[in-house]
Amino acid sequence: MRRMIGACGGTHASAATRTGGVPSRSLPPLATEFELRARQLHLTPDMYAASHGLRLWWCERNRNRVYVPEWLLEEWGIAVDGIFDRTA
Picture 1 (cartoon, rainbow, N blue to C red):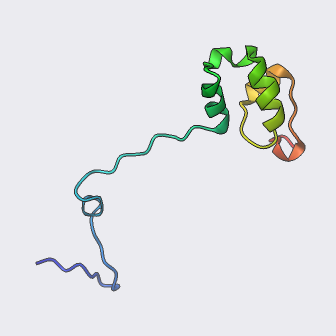
Picture 2 (cartoon, rainbow, N blue to C red):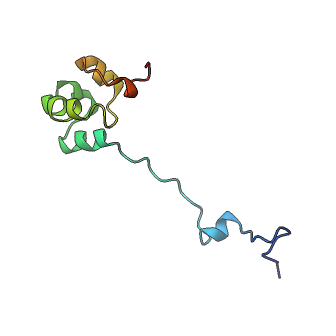
């Protein structure tokens, strides 16, 4: 029989024991709000720059609140407030 209490008084268990014997899988990355909006508009990345809806109704309103790809902001000439600009 193996002791579960270590020398410091804490318990220890292997990763397999903590997950019920199943190896843990890494979770897929979560989509940004920008990516979610682009999906709602049925856009692919090569369509972003041509989308007036994405630019006018979403990016210009949210540029200082959430992530918008820098290349897209530059292409559209949209500036962000200084606290959001990495060069500030």
